[in-house]
Length: 446
Image 1: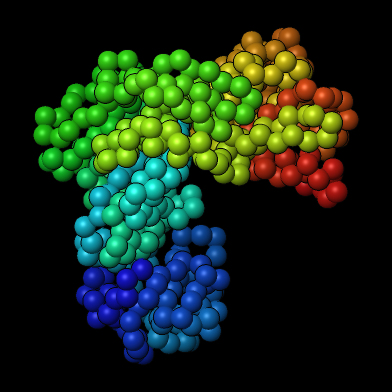
Image 2: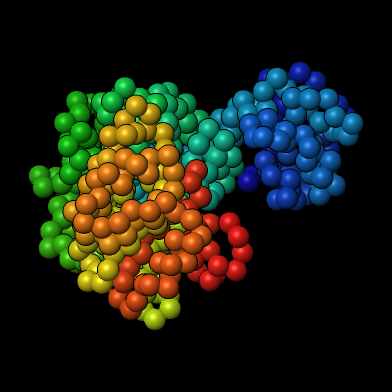
């Protein structure tokens, strides 16, 4: 973060009072007191189960220059505000306008984190590039990540998540993207929307936020995106059969995908046909800004997946375990089931949990999940969640059981060389804990 004068910070936000004096320059901002360094500003947010003010004293002891709080404190200095998250947002807006990097806004139902990481690799090979910190892509994480921009930043990539109308518009108003990417539109969080068309409308808030002369990278392999009404005042760069960048000659195995983009060959150590489109979006951005397809091909040979996202583990006597525990929605589940079906000859098992935030559509999509698993010949499904019955009733060729320690232990004992076990579920199902249990040999109770 570029150091900021305290008076500039105070002028940027709507505050009630200042207790004490802020001495020196603000050299960083934090929402986690454990990450505080000297002269960092600590925002004591009220968005979690525990008020951030519980950590205010710790923040000061660690060197915080001041605390931004909605409550009176017994320490100083602190800045009293009506809404601590709004103060963070307003400060982020002020800070963003101090710089002129190329800002990329990125959203989508599936694939946005993968595209973000690929983009960072490609653009980072030539330009000073920053991205969201970790997986912080919401109304807290995006303004927090803005402070990663500095004077030498040439590209800033902001992944934007949402589960309600208006959220993308709000985030775009903070970061002011000139470049936009929507990876896909599918029934993720559909429980908060009146159908898939409303999800499309929410995603298009990014498209509509682009300024005149902006650039939009369009995935025309996605039918909903392909048919949007196009603006005449921005540049469109299209991925698709009739687009600027066309995919062909796709091949995959257990560990990698291979394909061509405009006759340039790519081989990337990531799984799933769907990731070829994600790669094409990232490659197209690089090409638009002077990084050739051949250069991107070489760069993406070194791509590494992150924990919980399509990670392949080889355990025991040649048993394949797929860690895709980070999250789940109907499209992502089908993608992973297709991958397993097409690439593994041994017995197929699934240790999975509910897809959350589907609302009135939940029973339908869980019934469809059961059908999809059945068609892919999964031998056994161990299931955690409220929709076990919906999944089970549509599995005819295999067995479905409720996930518990005993059943998981039995699976571990019965799995043999060449078998594959898929671990997946929505974030709230915490399927990574069951995976950890499986991998550790059941040392501790869940």
